[in-house]
Length: 262
Image 1 (tube, rainbow, N blue to C red):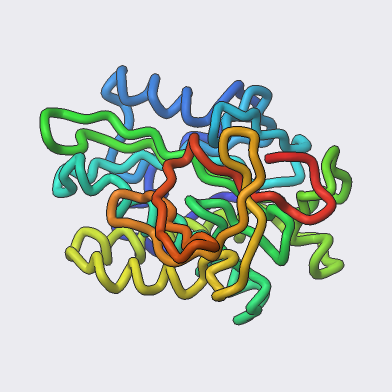
Image 2 (cartoon, rainbow, N blue to C red; image 1 turned 45 degrees about the vertical axis):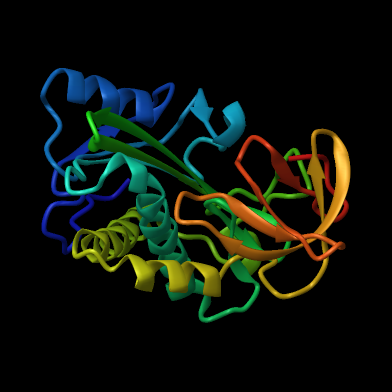
């Protein structure tokens, strides 16, 4: 991968390049434990063999064809109770990056809580692991996987930038641009602009369109309309009886068209 030199204050100013590793999040955590990771330290690999996703799922990416990286931040300004605000900032940074490549395409969305989707297919995922110190966040490891040049996937619910545009991409410039977008949103978070972040997130939220959609709760089908996302990150659905109900990540799943369950 080409040298990464983002125009940032701190994000990506320290880059740890690994040809192969199990998980960039795990490597970042080890660097923190050794006191070797500065604010914004970025661990990036060509091949991640044991990447992790949400709900304990494995994140699979073909070696050398995608972006797999982790960023270390120290959001000590953020109360533990406001952890989801960091999720908003990161997800929006990733969406900003994709919109810069694909344009203001209405098919480009963020699926709750933080997957990057194009129409009904996954373009990327995020896994944020926070370590708390009392009532504050001590440090955060932000793992990001983005499908770039890969053209074959084991499930029909995945796509890539290359499949969408018919182009092949150099990964270095894309990583550089991504780190710049991430830091802009992080600085917005640090400035306390919570409401602006939340408004931007809801504006690009997948299926936040007033329509009825299929979900699964405890193995049972459920029809609902996405009404909101709470400040703590719970998805709010309007049900057919007019009631509103909140769900956590482990409680509800989107049912995607022509797809295996996610």
